[in-house]
Length: 157
Picture 1 (cartoon, rainbow, N blue to C red):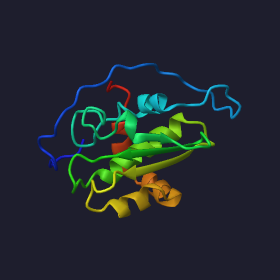
Picture 2: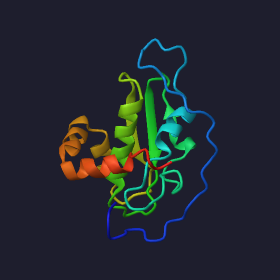
Picture 3: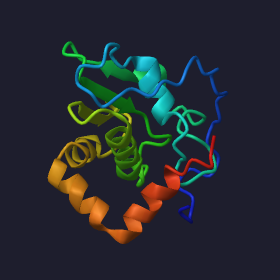
């Protein structure tokens, strides 16, 4: 985890009951489309890079922050950092991006966004998170990749 806390006393929220945890085939002809709840189940337990809490417990992601586009293969996740000046917002977004790249079929378009008005450098973070080349370059950085892997570690549930 990261040292030197940006938000030393975050507000903690109660986790919601899990409705289901389905794993869909990567086959484009899968009978049942992936829904909002299933996507939330994939990302709710991602660890915050600064605190020993999940993104759900910190209310960084909620089920309502997930939108599925008309084509059913476009997913938008809007997350809210715990503080407006969070220097780890791009890392949180990268964790969301990587987790969804690992769990959704490859034909899905994933769009990760910072909630409007919730971060001082919202436009810059959004641009970084939705540029495939920048995401790929970030994942080539060994230190950053280690932080992402730690946040996605399944030992936290």
